[in-house]
Structures are given as structure tokens and as C-alpha cells.
Length: 284
Image (cartoon, rainbow, N blue to C red; front, side, top):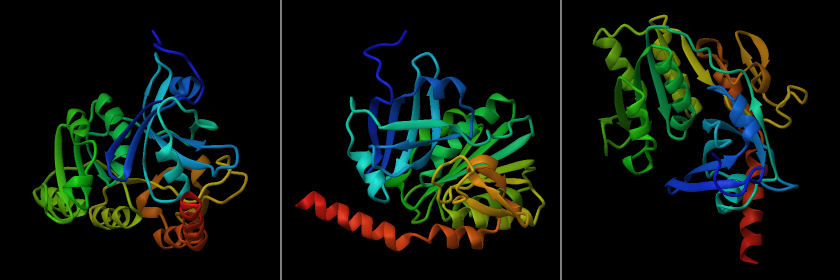
């Protein structure tokens, strides 16, 4: 039974997982009822706000809620992080995108880097429920910003951790841990890697040598999230794809990471100016 007053897009819970990563539980019954692993929403904090895509980390059909995790990186995510429990988002659109291909593949290595751990979590859970043996590798720059360790451990047959500075787990990158598994003779049937673009690219470079199918989740600039505007176009296998309707997941060995990186930097100056103006407004 639902408890408390129902209000569309209401923020039920808000938790800081680290100083710059926030977890929110939001009332969105239609999304909660239909969503599948790998899908995302597009939300707006207010009527004049930016539309931003965020992966659905979890959902509760009975209570009609969805869970999102986001990193504070710009004006919109800063505004979102400052919203309080009991306030409502202007809009929540979803579920969007193609769901993850969930089958019994055998042994699957699920890799999450940074806030990408939140994105890989529902996929890992679904793969485990489908009967796969799941080895999870999660990483962060330092132990203080590592998220969802306990949650990932509960849904994995084995959990391995890496930190860039060696403050916790393996001293190095998630790709190094993956290489160690391969060197030890681990038979891997599929890899799912989600996180910063450089991380996904390096993981794909490793797995390509061994012909291990590798799925990555792309989060390019999105506007309408319906495929009409073309803002989220990426090149996969030499063909133009739209992450919002064709993805967000693609065969990592076919992704043009150079193009993806350059497109992600297209509005860097404008984003920086928007954030600076926002800070000035806050101090007026």
C-alpha cells in the first residue's frame, strides 16, 4: 500500500552518496510500472529548466516510485541537488530508450566507473536474475566517492573494487582488473561497461583483443529524447545512430569514441558560462 500523500514527480527521498553524487526516489507510477533495465528518463526541475537524461537505477511498482542517481556537474544537476524532499520536479518523461538485452549468456562481467556504477546496477541485477554468473568490477578515483558497494555485492557472484589512488581495493583502473581476470583464464562470455567515456573506451580496447562482446551505455547530449532533433547522434559501425531511441546501449567495439568525445565537448563553453552565471545569481 502507498503511504502518504501522492503527488506526481514528488521527491520522496534524497540522499548524498558522496559530496557530489545524489540518490533520489521520485513518484512516477507510470514509469515505475513500465521501466526495464537500461532505460532512462528525461526530467526538468522547473518550467524553464534544461531537459536532462538520467538512468533509472531502480523502481518500486507497488509504491509507484523510481530511483535515480546523478553527479553534480553543472547548473541543472546543481539545481536538482538543491531540491528538497517534498518538492516536485516540473516533469519526468519515460521510460525512454531500448532496454538492455537480458539473456542467460553464461559469465558476464559488469563494470561500473564513478557514477556509472548506478547505471550498471539495474543491468547487473537483471542479468543475475536471468541466471548468469556475474562478476562485477566497480571503481572510482578514491574510496570516499565509491558508491553502491553493498548493493552491488548483493547481486554479484563476485565483486572486485579498484581505486585510482589505491585507497581501497586494487590500486589501478577497472580495465586493469578485467585484464587480470582474463590473464587468470577466466572464461568471459560478455562484458557490460558503463562509466566515463575514456574508461569505456579502454575496456573495449581490452576485450576486442579477445573477441569478447562488450556493451557500453552512451550518454551524449540530448534535447527532445524522441529522435527528432538529432542532437544525440553517435556513430556505431560506421552508421549514424540516435542514443535516445536506438540506444543508449551499443556494441562498444563499433562505437566511434573520438566522435563521441568531441560531441560531448561541443557546449563546454556555454555550460561553463551558465554555471558561472548561476553562481553569481546565488550570491546576489
